[in-house]
Length: 216
Image (cartoon, rainbow, N blue to C red; front, side, top):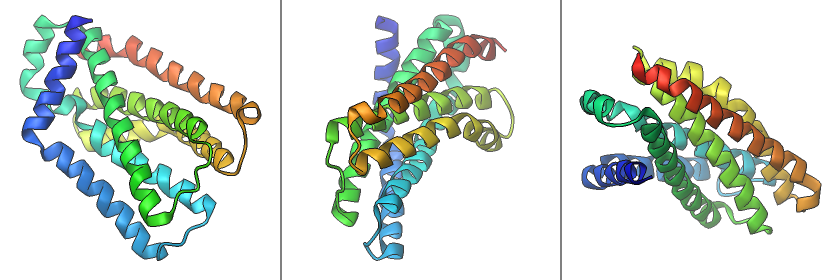
């Protein structure tokens, strides 16, 4: 665990020192939400609010997580001989997940200012949001690792990432709409458990595939 913590700390320090990744993500998020606000003139239905929230969160997540392994290009040989692949993967997964959770809070804050806040059941909405973010960050971390070892990285991210993330996105959107519409835990717990199950499958596959990808 100490090695994993040190790797997470390294990623945090790198992003904080460079500031370009964080600033870029914040600018992308703010510009996208504001452009959407101008297009809809600040008035959106519950369905549109929900769809926009997840679409913007998805593409912000892609920009945030896609750099997970690409930024390690100059240090790959050092990590290859000094770190266990599973330690590297665990650090990347945890950092990406925390990163996107922060983006989620910020997205809800900006959406609430510009479009209003239709969320009445915060605990249930955030549980679903965190489950969806966990799946998105895990999926794109895995795809980022594969794309890192291949050419045409941006193409690989799109081709491999979207099929993997579609089940997570569909379940997350459906669940959050029902929560916004007034559904309670007993009515949607099956869907939430289904989303968490998909998250677990993605994470397990990531841990199975990553050591082979890293060695090759």
